[in-house]
Image 1 (cartoon, rainbow, N blue to C red):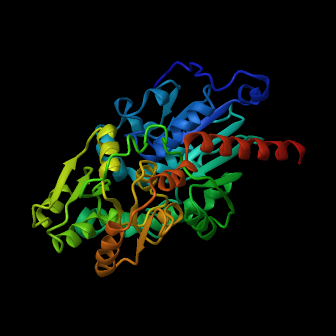
Image 2 (image 1 turned 45 degrees about the vertical axis):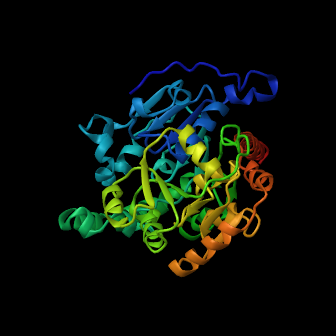
Image 3 (image 1 turned 60 degrees about the horizontal axis):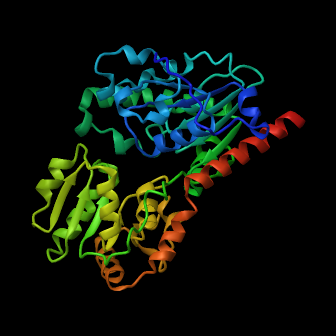
Length: 391
């Protein structure tokens, strides 16, 4: 358990926002082992609720932002397991017991940021639970094979996981009823919530730091293409490596780290493909500003890097499915391909030759700003709380 000072950051304090302090609030997040898209949502929730306590399965204090560390952070019994930060997914069967072990009896308002187990916390009678759902639990439903296989995990581990998965799936569906109101991070995810949980969800897109990600001085774009991604199987970076192997005259830069890094390097047979590894966000921004186009080959719940690239004025070539299909405006801020290498190469030529209005591309991303996220989320929660009070 981490005991942190709950210092105010200026987001509350007036009569209009008095309800923030009247309702004792808990924020639930699956785990804190780095700063990715889900943690960016958590940061905004922390700014909205500066006095809230955070409950999370595990927390690597060195891997989270100062905004998050201002809050008192309470962890589960999983925190005590040696090496847990490196191998936490191995303890997936313990997640239900761990998330249900949190005592929330003293909290009136529960706000969870969930893509796994956070939405399944138990609350006291009369408390209201809002869940910002990044996705229903991927492991339990349609993306099981993106994470687990006999080849990847070994036959013994894969066999055990396969055996417990029906229980986990049943638990995930059953505990979806503990949430009073769902918020989905895209229309794509709202449909998955409806499919697996039989619940409706309000769609509020996740926040993008559009004050940081900007086109800069509008310098002429350079002759390279860019991908920014965790290098894991389901991100499909191997797809674009294969495509650029067939286009040795075109340059590709890949930013990111992950378990597939070495295999991707081996697969890149030509010197036109370079791997920059994990870099500072300033370097990412500079590459967004300079790239001919940003490439997004996978199916994502939202795809925040796509919106970041658009905020920097970069056109995007994306798979026409999932969250990216809601971000990119085909023909205006980028192009879509159908999933085949042939169509990808064809659309790459199209996007290379087209001239896109940087201001229009940037304007498209402004609808995902942090300010808009906070306002929409706060308005939705206040409206539903008012309905609860009057109903």
